[in-house]
Length: 249
Ligand code: ADP
Image (cartoon, rainbow, N blue to C red; front, side, top):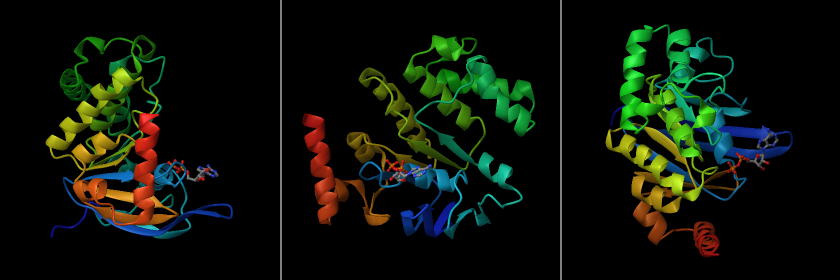
């Protein structure tokens, strides 16, 4: 099998005396879509932040195509550019237009020609149905539109892997679908993605592999149909039951 794009080996993450991630390991291969699920507070978001070296880790290592990703890495900035991250809270600069938000990192950090990035940004905005919004400001957009801009901004960096952290959690229900559809499209294009979500239908539809995180480590991991219809562990069963209950309520 080909080399993995991302390798996480025995990752340990603590906040003071609390161990959030307790020696977890996994790999992500080219074109794979992995969905991480688990109860609130189990460390999903922390894991994504560790992968981007936004959090110091206390043990283990994270490698992107074999290169160590850590706060001490000399080439951390270059490595981070290869890891596209989309958060729940868009993080667009309010005083910049949509287009300028997207152009900022590719032109300033990657030093790519503005005309080239502009053409790419406009093509990507068109793909997510936002051609008309390039010259508007974030405040003029809905939450779903802002999140689609944030996805375009990440794509314009040409990342090797995209990390999505609960990107629909802050959206009104009618906007959730437009964002999930964009991510489903990215999966169809063969993008490599690591997705944290509470949208279980979406998880089942998009995942090649679902990994269930609880108690500091992955409790089970497998194809979505198996996980959702025949979870192997009591903890996964309980998690899925709670979720169904919450959804009905
Ligand atoms: P999830 O994304 O699965 O809901 P998080 O990764 O946000 O979980 O949090 C995992 C645990 O780490 C929680 O118990 C949370 O309170 C704790 N935690 C997260 N960030 C910090 C921080 N900056 N300082 C201390 N504890 C934190």
